[in-house]
Image 1 (cartoon, helix red, strand yellow):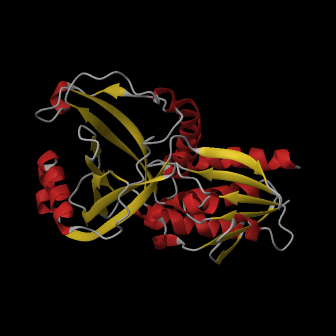
Image 2 (cartoon, rainbow, N blue to C red; image 1 turned 135 degrees about the horizontal axis):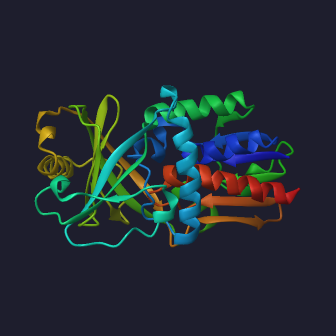
Length: 315
């Protein structure tokens, strides 16, 4: 089939790649690519954050976990496996997504910072999106995918050039494209600092709106962050950046020696549940794949596999 994917974030590109690998003729049209996408701002720590429903998200996350682990041996992919801890200020049950990972341990008391009484410890993929998005784009092109710039103002307009099916991976833009009022932007601001010898990630969600996370990459460390529901301001706020650095440095004192390199803001496309389904329209079938909240990277390869199944069912 000739399939057109709308959107070139991590979800759009993984869908395009998987469809091309399944033998379809695929092209991607997107208003923004690379650093222009929300995916480029992501901490990209494998973690099913603000995505529903739980059962389907666990399955998609498990698939993505396996795929990313398989990519970690190639430095060009930007994927590395890193041990880390999620910390809690009160005793906490195992996470609802526990079956998505092969191992998950409790943090020993001597590895709990002051003020914390419990925690998970696990090894997960951490993805440097500055490397992974270009790698994913190049791999898609080598698989025969054509990627071109363009703004789609109505999904019906994507049914040109003999396209049989459209895959809608437009993230927050699906709110206007589909009239989906359930999509809500959740503003995330992060700070990128120099690497100061950190190799473990840390996460504290005690305050859901003022998160603490420290995610080391090869050359930098990403500090976060915020989760401001309904806020669509894409500009970095200096006072917010200062608060983020202070929160993270209190958790990891070594960050006091880090130098700030960049400030970034992204709008997570939150929805009561991920929309992954086929819609029959007058122009042809549209497979919707959006509403991944703060888990676009975590769900990407799993959702792409299901998109390929839905497209195959059209034939």
